[in-house]
Length: 184
Length: 184
Image 1 (tube, each protein chain N blue to C red):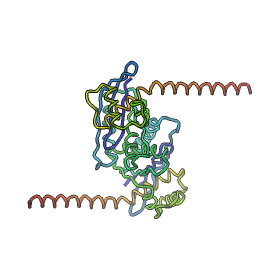
Image 2 (image 1 turned 90 degrees about the vertical axis):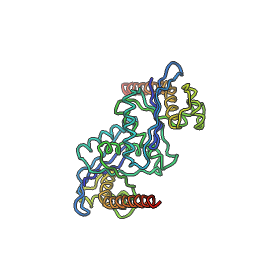
Image 3 (image 1 turned 120 degrees about the vertical axis):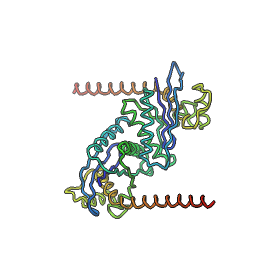
């Protein structure tokens, strides 16, 4: 499975591509940070990010996008821009019928380090080790984008099982309701 | 000037089109509310909104888009979706090289009713009167989208004067700096 990880942001947007292998094996294929000037109008910045993501999607053909789920408890002035960037990126995937999953920062940290409250240094160290990289990925947005992709690779089987269980439960529910209706 | 007003949202997204005439005269040309099912995945909902806005832009060719500026002080669970929808809409305009302006809810209320704290009923009543509509626009998202477009029509000359003044100040600053450099 080829997963594109995205740490959304207007000033710096981390993009990564990994390929999951047997078991928990993962290979990093690409990583980059897209930057847009803070003085530019918002819609121009969103267009620059959208263009970069379009290029990535058309070059790398990921099977799925993993985007960081933004919370508004963070810095109010940056969080809206982050959400808008995330929306534009999810749209680019939807236009290509590529599935999108959102993971919270603590889900990512827990998946990669085993600790949902790990700091940036710990996440970067584990990402470097998991992907057997020669050097630590910088800036932090690059490491975060890789961590998101790793998180999705490892959570995907569990998410698939949960979706299957939910679908089965829904099916049984409708079967039961049909039976009840027939008895009446 | 043809202005498209947007009250962004995932569940209900208000779209309006008005044409400004002489003085403060404004004519409503179209208004609609795009809805997306709350059970759909986020990226599918954003795609539905993006498709609807693409269709509006290609049909109506507005000169400028006026979008409500979202604040995260509001309901945390809906504000992120609203920001993401706004981002996708701003992107659609940027792709067509259409200018985008953001106005806060209080700027809109102040422009339309003269009171930045006006309630929804007052805004709807004033929108109905300003545009000489036969009936009140419903739901509230439709009235809000019209109010945004009205707000932009009336604020545009002031915004243009401010931008011109800023550009002039920047020019004088760089002239002065060049002179200082030459003297040294």
